[in-house]
Image 1 (tube, rainbow, N blue to C red):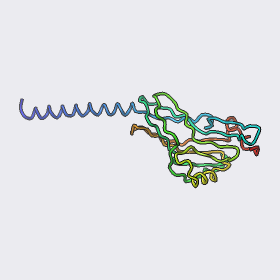
Image 2: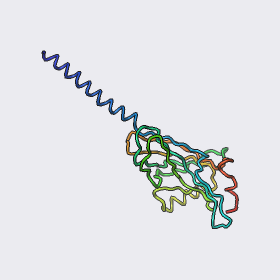
Image 3: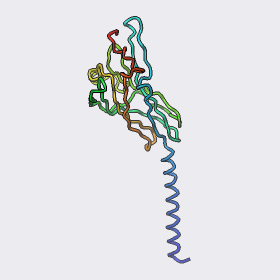
Image 4: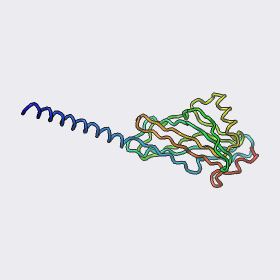
Length: 195
């Protein structure tokens, strides 16, 4: 076997090895965790109509279900809010709050393939009538006060979420609408002056 044939065989072997190693990467890419957000019931995940006394205000918890539609388990899933827009009624245009990029309070340890997890984003009470988010920076008064003022009496929220996990190829950026004006789920009586 002469020198040219050896070089050709070496190059062919290297090419086959390279293609095999990349096929493993391609397979891992297609099996990665993938996320899908399902915003059922206008984004209201739980509600309470309030008690007989003023000590028990009505509230609505806003959230969504996040599903892992991939073939691998999603580990250490973190959810960030990157933008918030509000309006009072559907006829109004969306008002951008200029909200800073912030992380929701609690990461999700694991999401197995094909399973969903409920994520509670925040709540609105009949006393405050403004959105209180469950963020990591909870307690930073200036941001909380600005958010309370900007969301007071707003009934529709469009929030952009960024979802990440330990797999660097798995991420999702999606806007979710929370609609408290929905007759079936929004319970318009929530905004009455009964607080």
